[in-house]
Image (cartoon, rainbow, N blue to C red):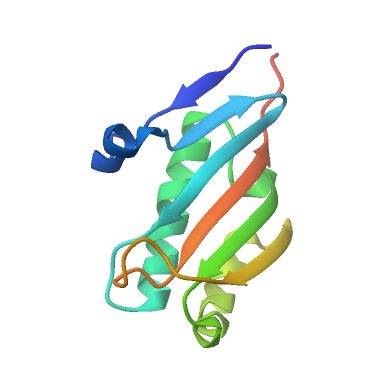
Length: 122
């Protein structure tokens, strides 16, 4: 089985020892991703943009996502993200889970992790 690692160049990849995504076993596994911004909705959109870029490097897109997990320190902040998530996944909604938990830094208000189908070789 071939494993392909996708790096985003983020400063924490080397510090912590991870990469943004791994293509293996027919799937693209994208690491938990936070976004910058002052609001949960800005962070949600920024995280989705980073995830989309990683998926694109793997030859996939948000339409290929089959599983998503949302992590939020305050579950009450999830609902404002729903329109963004609905627009992002549209007609191709993945299976989803939301977990209320602490994140690595209090400035982060949402973290998103996805698994997508990897493209098949032509």
